[in-house]
Length: 489
Image (cartoon, rainbow, N blue to C red; front, side, top):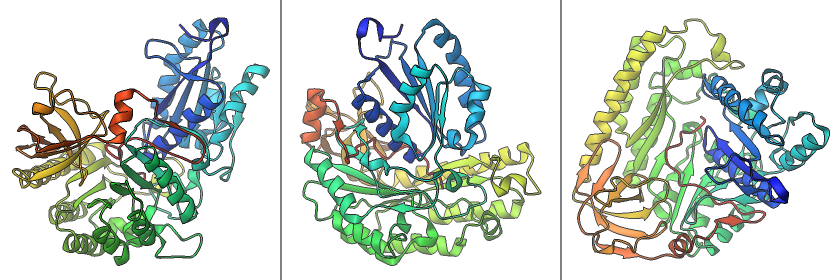
């Protein structure tokens, strides 16, 4: 049942799909709704408002959205007053088509006008008609909006939105617009505000994060921003995602190596190891350049964990092209990789290219790539057995095994660690810091089954223990750990 009966507050639920920017946007959507008087729905309730924050990158994004909308139609029929809103990249792309295909949708809003959602919901209720509002350019920078954050210890900090690249497989620039950069002072003020609330880790976020500064003409702005975070007392970990190889400069590597709180982890999309495919993708670097960046990163930071995105089966990809990708994967020695089978996206140049590959060819190559990646990641993880690690205890990673009582968290290099609490059982909270020793390696995680070396209580852990809602006002963003979400590049 819905919970808005008899004058009680209207409830909401946000369903998020896609990249880190969508996670960022969803926290803003939640903050806006709570500022407008809505409350988050309990798991057992049907909310009064359901918001879909959509992605348009993958081929099945449309089917997924319309399938979910179809499932909600009978629920809405049984609950008069329930509203459904669709936002994000797919809304920006499909616009009025969403209401045509699913006329029970009440609101459609785009990537540039998240802040309009509460007004659009109220207008749709008053007029008893669907409201569709899509802006062509950014109205309000998302970080100026209120937020309902999901973590007491780790957060997203958006430094830019949009992208100036023209990759032939990607529709994001058409939907998010040209790059818009925040001023460094605004970014650092937001980080300081988060740290004041007990936050230990921030991730600097942008669709092309290391081109930061292009709007105000400073090619070295991103490296300067990394260094400036090192001057913020209480901030223990800084990450960033996702950089583009064409914009990767030596000053950024130096900033990573020389700034103590910048983690030695790098997620840098490869997409293909074939120069011919990279050229067709309109990726303005080649395999030698990519591997050269990795070589410099590891020379400066031998312990760096490097992760990536790879697309298999791009139009025209030959067996020789694919083998070159395998060669780069083996040389790069990635800590992990998000691997994708190429899928057509209407509106992208790649969708109309000749030589689209048969599904069975793409699938076979994909399976070979997965096997190669897993062999490498497992070997790299085995090299860490016996080494000490610092783990930021996480919520949302879950327990590895309720029977053994293992907890989970992320090492400084971003790897997932399941660890035994030992004599600290019952005292370790999400947001606390544990030092332990790796005892076992799997392809996608590490285990530490021995007694922890130490446990440090933190203010973030205090907040988690107290059950305080991780919520902030205008201009402050806090989000989920930077794990498990591929970039949109």
